[in-house]
Image (cartoon, rainbow, N blue to C red):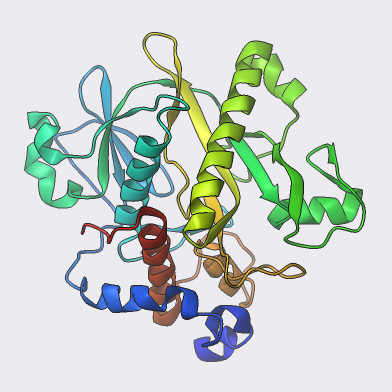
Length: 332
C-alpha cells in the first residue's frame, strides 16, 4: 500500500476543502527552503543535562540552562526518524511570544533568545542556536504536567464515553466529541520519563507538592489558558487543550518553565473549520498521529519514517500556527 493510498484514509486532513486554513504557509515555506534541519545537537564543550524527545538541554553556568528546540517529532511516546523542517524554530519563537504576552499572570524562566545576550561559552555554536534556542533560569521543576482542557477531545473524549467523566470531573450527559466544556478543567498528570503520562487527581497532586502549591498551579494554569484562548480566537485558532510546566526558582518563586502553548503542547483547531462530532482539522502534531493510525505499526520503537508529503504538511501547519498566533513570520 502506498503512502498516497494511506493518506486517502484521512480526507479531513488532506482534502483541498479543509487545507485552506494553512495554504498561505506553503507560500511562506517556499521562501525558507534554505533553512537547515537540526534533528540532533552534540556540543562536546558543553555539559549535556538532558536530551528529551524534542529538546536538548545544556548547562550554561551555575544559574542558567540552554534549551535547544530541535526538529525532532514524537508520537505515541516514540521519536520518529523523520525530522520536521522549521519545527524547532516554531517551538522556540512561539514560546517566546507567549512568555512575553502572559508574564503579567506569572513570571517565567526565559532570560533571552538573543544570541548576543547569551554567555560567551555559547557563541561558537550560534549557527545551530539561532532562532531555536532559549537561555533560561535553572529551576526545581514540579514532576507534573498542568493540563487544562477547554473542549472534549482526545483522551478526555474517550474517558467521557466510558465513564461520563473527564479525569474525575463529572460532565453533563449527551455531549459530542469536540464540544466546548461548560468550564475549562484542570487535569494534572504525572511526567513520565518513559511511556505514557498518568492522569491524577488534585488530591494526589497535593500529597506531593502540598495544598497551597496545588491551588496556585491550578489557578495560574486556568488563567493562562483563558487569556491565551481569548487571544487565539481573535486570530482564528481554537485552543482545545494545553499543558503547562512549572518550577521553583532560586528564590523559591513558582514560575512557568519549559515551553508555552505550542503545537507540541497544545491542541490547536481552525476556528473556520470547527464543528462538533468529529476531531477537527488541527495545526498540531495530531495530523501525524492520525497518519500513524492508518498504517500497520504497533506503536512500539522503532517508529516508522513519515512520507515526504506528511512531513511537509506538518511543517505547513506549524508555520501557520506561528503566523496566525503571533501575527509575524518565522525568523529562520
